[in-house]
Length: 264
Image (cartoon, rainbow, N blue to C red; front, side):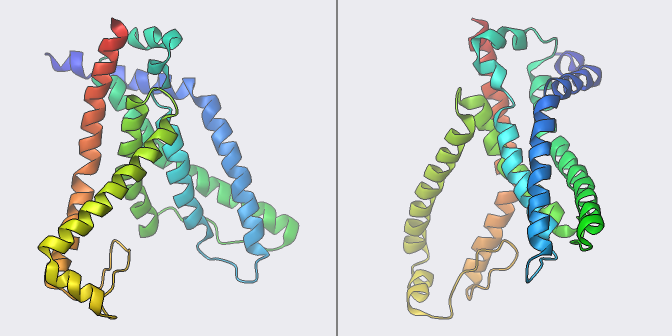
């Protein structure tokens, strides 16, 4: 297969442009709703007895995760409808280009849009608050480590919803969340069994000691065991390098399979 038939920068650009134009109304509605939410949160914050200096960092995390997951979940809605599936198949682009276009828009594209959008909103909102009420919150600063870490976590979690958008025919967002809960519940049970068998001494110490405890933070887990530290460190590395590429790869092959079924 020639590279040009598999991936063409010109076709990819036109496809991304087409996807943006076809979804511009939905994007405007989403960001209109976000603006209202941001303004209400800012009003509450400036009149709070203990105003938060991290208001917009928290809002950014909520926006990029909640809105991002919802937008990702509807990326492939046309391939699951009979009236639009054929139109999707007739788009003059390879399966990989269609896949990559939606992936870029729902990851890098959405993250950049959220950064730029919230930055602009924060200055608009706080400008209005200053003019009307004479007080304001600290505007959003988009270049903090906390913001970039939230984006990195979003990319990992987004891969699951991206697969759900292709895999499920209806109610993609809800079904993906349900699948995640079921998986995490099963994983927790397996984790307890694994720890009980392999790390019997650590497990026993955990049950006996008041000083042995876990804090659910990705960067700091004060664990009094070298083996447990190594296990946590390994889990962190695996978290960053495996889930996203794995789910994106599965998504691509699932998309190819869905296109073949729709073509029959």
